[in-house]
Length: 304
Image (cartoon, rainbow, N blue to C red):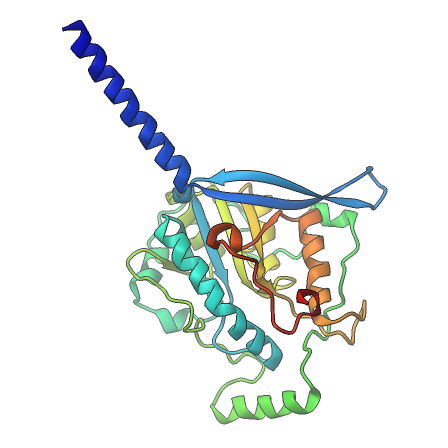
């Protein structure tokens, strides 16, 4: 009898070990990159990398403003190039148990009554709802230690003639050429049975808290504007205690090379990504989930 009891306990231990191993194998194995000051006040930063394993059920991906259209034609082109890879990332993350929140701001009317939209609206109010989670956040205290890296008062990098033609094309479709978006780009699929749709910081916070989600990854556009500043963006997530990262190869900036610091568009984006890593949140890359190599825009000189 003792030997049978021992065998049962041993078998149970093996089952538990197998389950633990399976859970560990399914974890999202990420390498978070940040930039840390070599000496306080010196202004010199070094890249630091930290390996982490994220539990998928405690993780969300927020897809920020991947609209169907934009007033900047080059922004539309870059988004169209990036979107298939982003959808592949989202599909794989969802299959692993990650919660996907689609946040195409100002487009909620298009999704009225859709199950994924109702799911966001129906989330119970969180007990720890931050007071300003419904507002844009233009800066957090850590950013006061640095200099904002790019000028963005004129952030469109279109050829002027091409831009004018694009505006006329949007008008001909009955759209506002300054804000032509109506929905999320169709390439990125929404699964109504499990996803959520919202552009509200309050609704998104409620969704996260109701599911016990502490890890948040942001993808989408534009990193120096909406991705950082929206009520559900990097700054709000960081300052309110979420373990937030930016997927740095799944974003783009609004930057015109005719403005400071007078570098090409992709270098301007890279400079802002460094700002994020220094003062807002760590970054990761899509290949850490998908395998292969990080995504690069075809026009980026740094890819060659």
